[in-house]
Image (tube, rainbow, N blue to C red; front, side):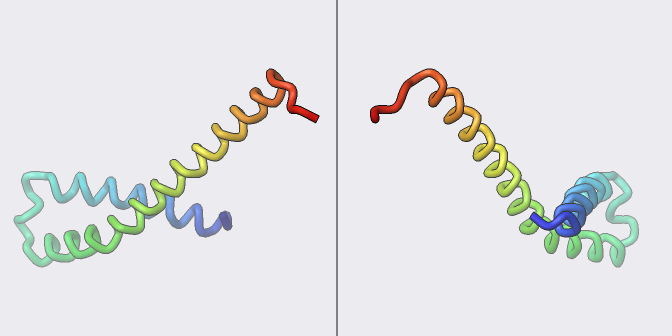
Length: 80
């Protein structure tokens, strides 16, 4: 994946954590305009971050499968 895209998605992940903390604070609803803004931003970011996390898991699964495949090839000679 492009480095710039990865950095941007990582920043969105961090921002989502910040939003979760802000929205869960007791003072979140003191300023209703700000609360609406935060909830809207949260709603926009969640699907993107969820897909990015799924992508990261898939990438890790691919690496694990490649490692396992390499170990298998070393242990079991393939028929010629």
